[in-house]
Amino acid sequence: MCEQKIDPCASGPCHNNASCSPQGSGLGYSCTCPAGFTGPTCAQLVDFCALNPCAHGICRSVGTSYRCLCVPGYHGLYCEEEYNECLSAPCQNYATCRDLINAYECICAPQFTGENCEVDVNECESNPCHHGGTCIDQSNGYTCHCPPGWVGGSCEIHLQWKMAQPVDSLTNMPRHSLYIIIGALCVAFVLMLIILIVGICRISRIEYQGSSRHAYQEFYNCRSIDSDFSNAIASIRHARFGKKSRPTMYDATPISYEDYSPDDKPLVALIKTKDL
Image (tube, rainbow, N blue to C red; front, side):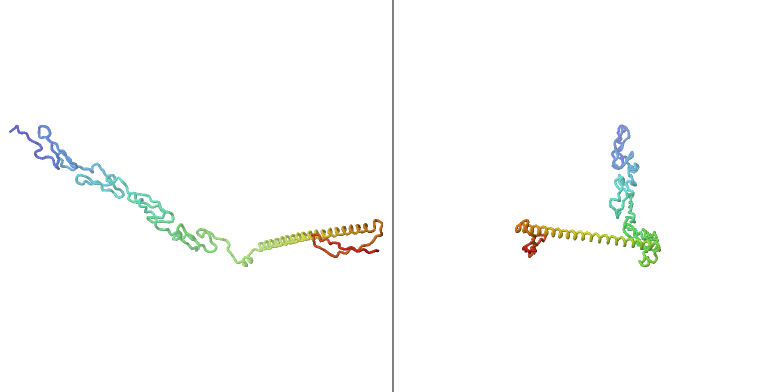
């Protein structure tokens, strides 16, 4: 009876389908646990969450494994990846998107507002136009239509003068200003009169010089005709009577003209003699 060998694994001490192996010559044994179990007899589940495997989440043991329940804004097996909410371009009207944890922020242009910058700001709601000005909202600001006597971006500048009718302006004009205007007009009139007189004198002088030159030309032409006529008479007398003949008077009568040159010289066609 004492020689019979006892198998320590015969009673199945290892749980969860673990493998039992005798150890030594006594009643010792060891259990080789499958995945997800631990302990001397593989009766305990492995606590995977004890090592905090989830970066941004809560660890939950599920059977022989675990699962990370990610906080909003993260995803992945270990909740290690963050969602980028700006990838969907939620911001409108050229706004800038800033990614946050499980959120985003739109940095709007000055004239827009709203979560996604979708609302155009009505600058006229703050009544920026003063002194009864009319505000007109625009996409990039506002415009004020100011009443008479006021100017500026918000109708804040008061004009100290206003446009008046011409008759009223002359009536209400200071006396010394009126004298200055009348004097300036008189000076301008005198200068214009002087310029007119000088112009008339210059034109008359030019015309006079032109007519004098023409009269001189006619006189020169007449002298040339007289010289030719005298030479012709002298030649006839010399040919007929010689140098010592009795002087005789001659009548030269031009009987025809021919406009053959600019000088308009008459042709002596016939010479009649008459004794004195």
